[in-house]
Each structure stands twice: as C-alpha cells, then as structure tokens.
Image (cartoon, rainbow, N blue to C red; front, side):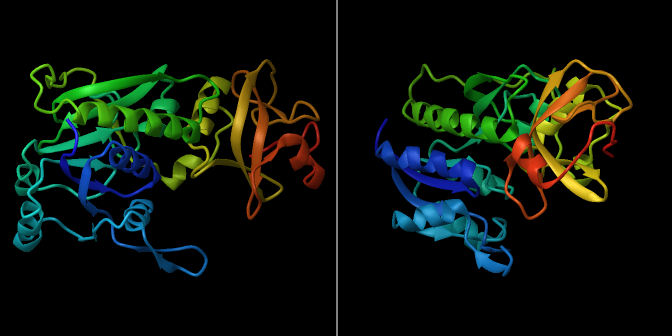
Amino acid sequence: MRGLRIAFMGTPDFSSQVLTALIDAGHDIVCVYSQPPRPAGRGKNLTASPVHRLAESRSIEVRTPTSLKSEEVQTAFADLNLDVAIVVAYGLILPTAILEAPRFGCLNLHASLLPRWRGAAPIQRAIMAGDSEAGVAVMQMAEGLDTGDVLSESKVSISNQTTAGSLHEELAGAGATLIVETVSRLGDPSLVAAAQSNEGVTYAEKISKSEAAIDWSRSAEALCRHIHGLSPFPGAYCTHNGTRVKLLEVTVVKGAGEPGQVLDNDLTIACGKGALKLVLLQRAGKSPMPVKVFLNGHSIRKGEVLT
C-alpha cells in the first residue's frame, strides 16, 4: 500500500532512519511529532532532535508538544485525517484518543523481540544479559508499556563483540526495512497481529550512571557483556591513579590474577574469572583510541591494579 497519510512520532537518530525509509517509500508524511528542543553541548543551546531536523530538511510540519493529553492537541491530531501513525522512540505516552484517531491506529517499532525487553533500554539490556539474539518488532499500540499485539518482527544475532552502538545501527536498518514492509501490507488479511505471550516478559530499565563503574571481581564473560552493552554511551569505566578511563571494546582471553590486575604490557586485565584484553579505550575529553595509541600517552604497567 503506497501513498498513505502518515504522522511520524519519534525523536533520536534511531527514529530518523525509519522516517527516511518511509519518505523514500513514497508515503505522505503529513506531520512529524518530536520532543521539544533541549539544551545541548557546552553552550547548552536549545537543539532540535535528529527527527525534528530531518523533517524540517524535507519541509514537513513539526509539532513538539510536551504532552498529548489536552483536548486541543488531540483535536489537532485527529484533524490530520491519518491512515496510520508510526511511533519510534518518541518519548511521550499516547492517550486513547491519539491511539484510536488514525484509520489503522498507531504502530510502534520497538527494538526488541517482544515480550522480552519491554521498556526504555532494550538494546543495552539484551547485550548485558548475554542474549544470543535481538531484533525489532512492529506492534499495534495499546494502553500499557509495549504490550500491544505484534504484526511483524525481524531478528539479528548478538556476538561477544556486539556493542550497543553496533547493534543500534543494525537494528535501525532492520527496523526501517520492517516498518516499510509492514505498512505496505496494512489492510491485507494476511497481516495478522499476534498477542504477546504472558511468559518471558522482561523489562529493560533505563540505564543508570551507577551501572557504569566496572567491578573487576565479576567474570570476564559477564564484564565483556556489561562493557559492550554500555558502549559507546554512557561507557563503562575503571580508574587508574585517579584517572577515569572508559572501556569501549574488550575481548575475553585466558588469564588469572587479582581482580583488576594488569597481566601484561598490552593491557590484559584479570577478572574474578578469566581476563579481558582491552581493545578500545577513552580518557575524559579525548576521542576513543586503540590500546597501543592509548598507552603512548598514558602509561599503565604490568602488575598495577585498576579499580
């Protein structure tokens, strides 16, 4: 189905790729809803979201309400006379009046294989939990947190070297393809929504800053998942002589020693079980750098202990 009247509701980079795919597929994006501009950067200047900027570059009307609860906002949404609304990491709860206004309702693209990892941080939590696969799902939105019936999904594998950053990009691409395919089948009897199972429900809690500190007493396998799940943001960190160092990429290797102990001159670090070879690091105010480049400007000797 081509040429649908669509409102797109999203905010971050992940959403931008989906919006671009819908535009390129020939649909009429009559309006974009996004979070209001926020202070950003060192100057704390008001900055529009990636979706907001993309929509403006394509001459699409942008609306940035702080809530969708008022009758005025809901009437303005209904007046768009939509076929469907596509919601991707928008950031506001959609009231019933919004959910029911479009002809085909509101569809949400969620970055997990529902019902696993409902909630705010599905990409990070899937990696941190050691899941072997992740994916994207298109669901028919209903009241409740990611509880709607699933129309379609696409799966990808997670390896020991998958980071939140790399998985984010892979799922954004997969999601863009999936949403275009799903929208093209709206109204087709073969597109059947499946209710989510009541078993296997997990919630992807928002990442807290306190989780970023590395505990070297954990196993190398667990720490690898933890570090990669927080890479590149907020970045898991350790300290050396009072200097905070973010670890962005690591590899699990053989080795033993006091947790946090540097086992060689290439930054292999002992864990509670096994060891990690550090691959990509970042100091405050610096760009990420490979371990050899990092060691040129920051000496860490064999036998020292990272905390």
